[in-house]
Image 1 (cartoon, rainbow, N blue to C red):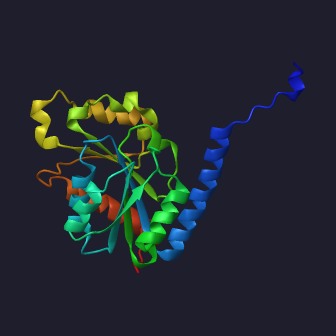
Image 2: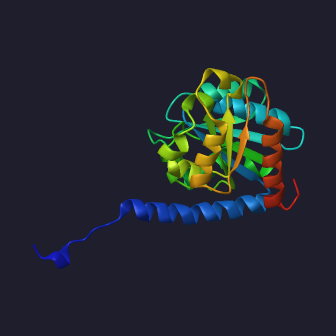
Length: 228
């Protein structure tokens, strides 16, 4: 075979590069709308939905908030949000385990982002795929629950490299599990020296005032201190 005729197309790299450019464009659009977009990622069962509800409790007096629920199928979490009085829409990914920037844009249009100050994406439950695709969010929040173990940053490095803030959920169960908070924090720091690490309990509400304060500061920094 003539090696000069061999063509190798790096499809994944090309897709990711195109998505990264689109994600940057989406962030510019959101800045123009004065909308802060937060991407929440975690494994299934970590307490994403209950944690988001706790965050909303602490933020709803300051911001108009909407939640986009991304799942391969089903609408359980969206119903939970709507029952709690939170504006919410369901995004079905068609079998894909992540959202990208264009999927985000479609969801943001449907939920009416120009009329919201804060849109929270509950990404598909997975510690691998969602971290590979920039959603166009301004910040990435990762939730890790105590039962999952303090070694997860070593096993899923990209997720923690992408994180701007990490919530350690279910600290009310610390005594029941072999979880070392100092070791976990050190493992995060080995991957990401800048990410904030905030222990929380969605069961009791502990720590969510600090988590909400972090989000509020990030939103004001992005929006220049001006809500709509």
